Image 1 (cartoon, rainbow, N blue to C red):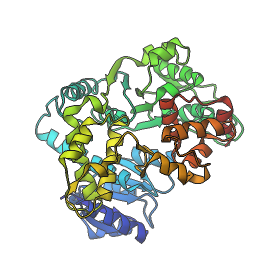
Image 2 (cartoon, one colour):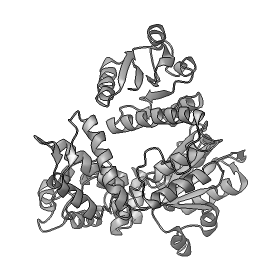
Image 3 (spheres, rainbow, N blue to C red):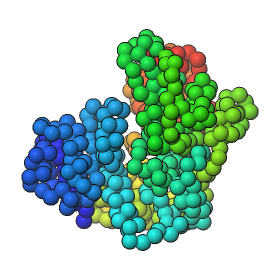
Image 4 (cartoon, rainbow, N blue to C red):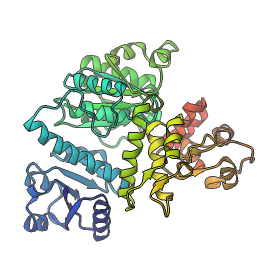
Length: 471
């Protein structure tokens, strides 16, 4: 059993985190400050230290040197890019913002401890090229081929374009490329290009000088510069505005970045890993994506197969997720019924692994007085659809959603499907609401709203984009 030390001065947060980790089979110790942690415990005896950044006395980052080879995960309620980047530059293995999502915390802990254990194994023996990637499950031929390609390209500095449907694990592949490269002692900066408004994306990526525009009161380093020496992961790069594409092209060609409002450029050494679910070649022919940038980033392309093409892996993934959620929710180990297995194998899984995660989490929560997950608990009939692909929130039948009027949205006719209702509501209100308001009324995240726009072919209108930038 892995041993974890929590260093947190707020008793409520410390107790909640301890209980969460203990439910996931970790042995947990705790301390309210760096001083007490070092006086009570031998830090090197732990597999991981989870510490708040702001503590009474010494900051949590002091533990990084004191802990030696023990990895330190920093929590910060200030959740700013600067504090996170500074912590990782000082040697923190990762950071997480408070208030943290339970799944996010558990996944981060598993990833860090798993990486440390893998590093220890690598010290005594070599790992075969066919070894699976951390966080990814699959022994099918197509996945074995993907693993091998990742292992081959990761040690190089080649730009990589990852293509795959939503929910197939593109960020997991990007992280594997970074972790297996010679840049893994530097930062991997992840940016979802679809989640940042067009008016802000350039300043976020490239930074700006004081006075560059209204509201630029100080100099700010961009995310490209923050990734210097490491890896920059641009998720959904197909959503990057053309102006930002031109600046990114200069970064790749010249190895330098010029902040907005500056007359001087700065040299940067950044490896780019980009991901998209869209056909960039088609977009470039339509003038919606720079052709020169497409050829520049398409050095090595990794194709992630959709779940429906991985029949050998689906049940293995489902059973692994079942074990995870049983541990997370403190339930006895459950198993899949034969009917549930048949349903899982026959379903098309348009949301891929993310949708399967939601289905298994939902089934574990709803299962009562049984040691078996039945088909009805999965709720994966084609008449059903997840309300929010990212949060794992409950599933509603179309008629029930019609009566529910989420977040104050007008009720729909009972004979409308959920997709029809979503499409009608967006089309009727997008000229008068920002993306944030639309998402809130529908009860989904901005990212989920964007993904559904893509799937249903509902483009953002200019007036909607303008409203979003004002908000």
